Image 1 (tube, one colour):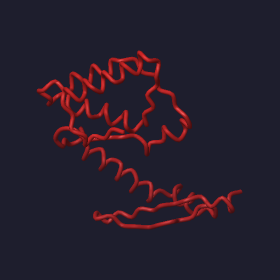
Image 2 (tube, one colour; image 1 turned 60 degrees about the vertical axis):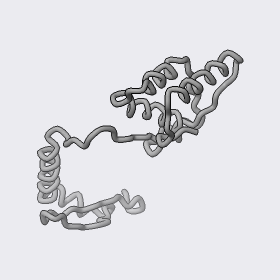
Image 3 (cartoon, helix red, strand yellow; image 1 turned 180 degrees about the vertical axis):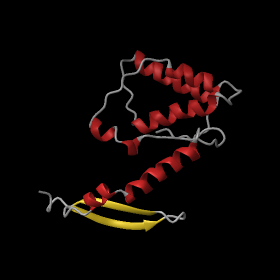
Image 4 (cartoon, one colour; image 1 turned 45 degrees about the vertical axis):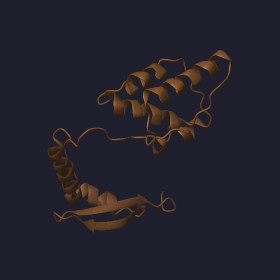
Length: 151
């Protein structure tokens, strides 16, 4: 198992690479959980721009080896909850982030005032699950479809 918390140095990465090469030469197979392989790859991303001791270069050499991914129960493995995302670097605002959020908020506010939307929300199969207010005073509605009332 590998996690991003493991401290790596060039020697450890070379040993890991040599073990993989030896396994390949002997016709062996190395079974690794996807999240461990992804953690190792993300460790490379973390180090590639800041590493001065060659660890990132050694990790790149490790990834240059030939690998085959064999997925069992791929529908479960590829679910978004198994994807690993790590932030690297300093926090940066999204391009036009504020304008984008305000635009979405305005569209949702207008939809709640629209007569056609009100008709849809009044349908018997539509169930209002929650009503809430935001700090700006906007009313938001969470709705669902009652399958038993669906016609």
